Length: 475
Ligand SMILES: *Cc1c(COP(=O)(O)O)cnc(C)c1O
Image 1 (cartoon, helix red, strand yellow):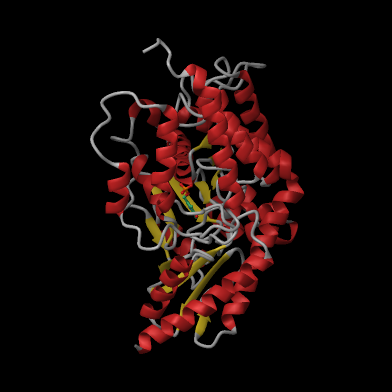
Image 2 (cartoon, protein in one colour):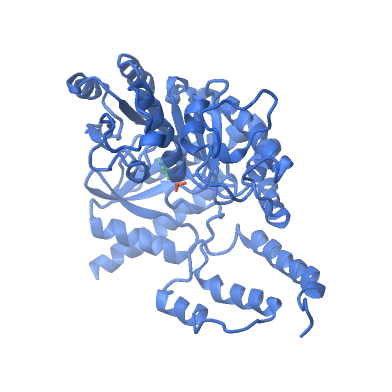
């Protein structure tokens, strides 16, 4: 075997792979949205598994076999009719930038290692702060998703509230520290609890404030909770975009209450809802959001960049650097010094995530991003309206954003069966949820390519599958 047996064939391998990827993307609008109906994990294990490979194999064969083996279990998450969870697709410029990110293979930890990747993050971060209406000077960290953005921002919050109490948590840790009270809504997203757990604040200690039917924190209940709390370090977490209903906590009212408590920190989970700030007619939904201290959001949801891409924003850049920075974190960067991305996120070495975000913002611009958010919300409303006029169908939420909850024949069985049938049929994909104790389907319209026509096709598929589900129930 020659020393470097693969090099001569690599260009052809990459061309072949790119051709396949291009064909795959071209098929996205028309391919079945779900994985192959009936596919089992045993089947996937059988085709993908086997003993540990003991020696080399031709890369072309590896790629072709990988494609063949995984295809049945791929879900067309980029389909304009994929409505599962809250997931975006990827706009073309961003997808292309993602390929380049891999080809360039930059380690985005520090400026010295990759001046361009570091500068792209610096600029994209400034654009995002302006786009989302956050205070000028807010620091941005490029994370894998909103969950890691929670971890990152909550660590900054922990630093901030304990610094105010005279405690250096980075040096001393939490043992013996003044107690930090964490207050959040009853309908806070599960990822926030992951973040609290990881920064040592404990998911079970958070004080949960009652919410209304749409999942919005009730300010009078928050006031009651805060009045009863002893003075001391406090972190309040609000939510912009509840994962089921899309509802927004009343952030202005919450910010008023937090402002009354000296040194308290307000964090906002805006994984997708924060993007309402980009649409002038929707900005009222996030009114007051600029008064918070930190924000977590995703780029891989509504900005429609490829996975994995989240954003951690902290108003007090020094707090973020103190919590995450690698060296001399307490010191501000020297004037004119380059920005090292690793001072703002948990990792040192990592992928140059800024390229995809930069490309998405450049290709869409402010108006293009606003148009996607607005159109997605319009399609969500049209799907809700179409469902509401079907006999036996109940839309459960106020459709203020891109999320629709619906229940069929007031039956858990019919509702679940309908979701499964639509998934198997292949026109569209959405999942089920249990919201405030009631089983429902959840439709999230978050893809840049989704149009009114997709909404109509989805309603048609639901109509067909509902008839089948009812027929099956009658036996
Ligand atoms: C998706 C989501 C998260 C978690 O985001 P990841 O990117 O999956 O880590 C957090 N909060 C809300 C409201 C979400 O919708």
